[in-house]
Amino acid sequence: MRICTLAAFPLFLLLAAGCEDTTTNSISDINSIVFPESGVSYNRTIQPLLNIGCATSGCHDVKTKAGNLDLSDYLGFRQRFYDVVVKGDTINSRLIWSLEGRLNAVPMPPQKPLTANQIRGFKQWILEGATDTIP
Image (cartoon, rainbow, N blue to C red; front, side, top):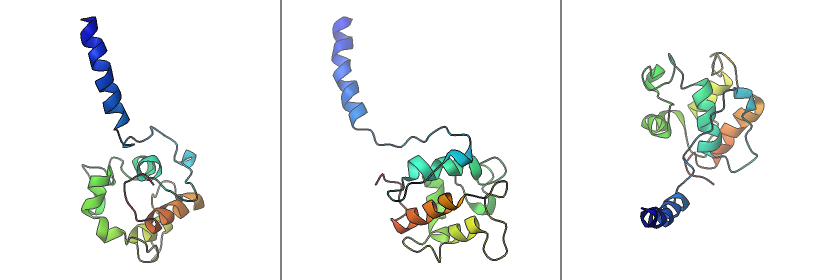
């Protein structure tokens, strides 16, 4: 029994070392999410913010999909990605229009508009290619 446990430990280390950062933080306060100046990570900053402000029941969650847009994970986002994001172009990305409340729209998320840092972070993410990979 002890030999089996010792043999499994190196396998565990190998698997753990090969993992990508695909987890998101369990942050509950949208104001606590601060974007870096560059190297914006979808998994560390974008998705946690979407989880709190957008992918909620009755909005852009997997069940409701307001505007046919699921923001609960990158795969859901990718289904409508090219409708809302133009990689490298913040002027023509409808996601930014929504966040800033352009065209007389209510800024998203409606319950608490994003901070200037958060909007700038979304713009930086788009300029950096809007991927789900870690820079």
